[in-house]
Length: 599
Image: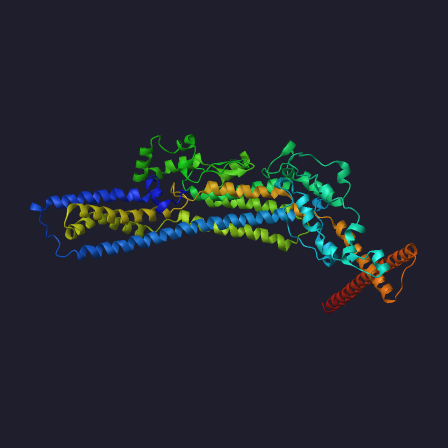
């Protein structure tokens, strides 16, 4: 694919020769000018020849051929964009199946001690009116792992609106907001995940160290975050690739194998699209995560790579392109060999041998599909995907099946050429335009230079449009205007690497902070109600110490009563659920007994 820059009026595009339909068409335009000059030279004494009674006959021919060429160009565009869309859809479906498998794997029992806390288990936090708004807390973006994650929800501004009334203000009967103290500052104990702890972030780029045992033992959420940190080692090297392996640590084997088998599936399907040469294999290579993107434009490849399929001379390369010699099977095979499709984790000798034993591109793609499906189902049956229901797992198989469907759509375009009768007709009448246009211009133009220019431009336009149709009707093999499969495969591999990132760092929040806030809010409301009752009854505390002790005792008793009521209510709800389930079981047993009797 030629990746071009859209300059002023696109003038910069005019200087590209390799892959250009303009310069291919201009060759036919030059022949048309030569024919026009020969016609003019054949005229005796500069008089116009009367070979045509009227030029409209040639005009009708040119109009008909133009319609024929435009029709083919339109279908060429359709084949090209359909091929691009089919490839993108297939890769998208393969990636959906892979990512779903990785997500389900993170729900398995192996991650019970790593998974972040669930909001379902702490539904009562909704009473605090908290938000999950994210805010940047530091200029060092790499040190947000714990700090950014916690402070986004630790922000207790909503809770701060519930104050505790100061005792001296109650005694004097003058309650002012300026004398109020916040709940969090007085009742909730300091959290191990507050700011002073968060400064020692595990993603701090200046220290890059493991947390000490004492720090990890302070909080369950820190233990989980640290286990996530060690299970997915790329988190230890911020601003680097997710496939990084510091100190030789590697991500979970399931994810590594899943990434490899998915990358292999995509690479095999794409390789069969660009190679239609019997007994010639499209090579696969090892992909190194984080490496530069493969160049989409063959002209931007390294020199040693280009010399494998191009001539040393640029002029010779352009001549081969104009004559179509670079599209011969041998040249195309050399191009495929020089640009192997990269596979994450490489390809083993056994995999290569099995792929070679599969005869034909369709068989190779289905073999890779078989490997992927067998891996996913085997791991699911052995518990690698947790308690996710089989009906949900079946969606993974459906995604891969959809990917194969789109692959076959692309294969249809690759292996079923543009219909021969139409292609032959288009070629014949396009060639007839080279002598027909000069005859038409000879009848219309009164001077030599205008006839030459119009003949050249008209023939170049018609032949160039026909060359565009020929280039686009084979979107996977017409170098350099082919779909950049190597680049797409590299992007696919980099997307697979994101599976090694583990859980979202913002998911690790500490429920203990907010449970304390709930307790504080309850005590604050009880305290305010107690103070309000005292003020209504006109009771004034003359003995500050005695009154304070009495109010503290009342607050503690009321808080204990509230807690007991909540526990009793929860027990009652649980008993109701159990009773309902017992009734349903009895009803089911009666239905089964009646069916056995009837049978």
